[in-house]
Image 1 (tube, rainbow, N blue to C red):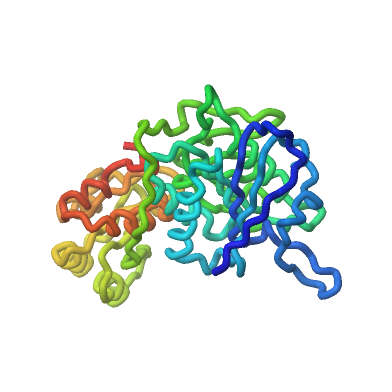
Image 2: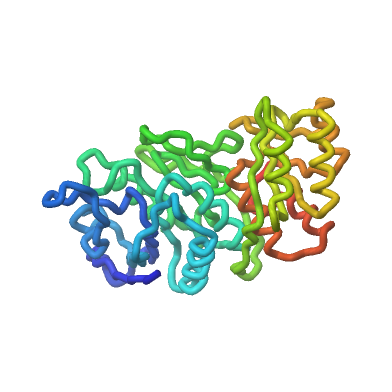
Length: 355
């Protein structure tokens, strides 16, 4: 993986309002149509002013870091997340904010992972992208990029307006670990069903202060370890013992996100409960997440979830699957004692759950 750095001349004056680092990882947002070969090709970000001339109106200093080769977001990996965290760590003092251009398919996973890796964050890290390439006439890339940059640069009393990892898409600024991709063919690709938007962009950008994280004034810390030994087990009527066993007893598995029904309900048949009990007894952490887009896990509310509570399944509250699996990766990567690990999985670490 090669990192190419390009300074963008926006004709900003000598005293810019903010300096922003744009990190282009790949995805639709950075594609243009090649007329000669009749297909989409990666965009050269040194020419971004030609595609987005509105950037000349910003009183910002912009720098683009472009990853080569670009990553299709379907191929994004733990190593890519750790690399992004290192890039932000290395450039943290030099910039007021960061905008990460990313493919939409796994953007919610990446934003969730970065939210855990970047502890005591005091600056904006805004993920954005596009449903239509920047080189097309009806692209949403320009508006998403322009507004993400404006949000990343906004300060109040000298401090960043939104000091957390976010997703900005189609007029909505969402907490990164609350976002979920819900559309593949419309511009409003992301929603946050269990937490309100941090801001809405119309004629003005209207922030909702009470929804934005307020971090303690502690030193910024970047974590460099995620544990990949996790799995997602989605329940469905007719699921067999063989399928459940293959997931819970997969070689090396340490944590499982259990996608249950409704408010955390699961089958009460003996074989299922015994397999769960055996997995937990062997040291596997099971995190209960609802399959519903809205609502929360409330273990014990019904008899069908009381069994899970009693055997030690961890309730995930209103966490998304994307935030749950990356939370497991992060917490397991800390290599803490069992009780402390459980406590962290139950805790609200970066605003990912409502307790």
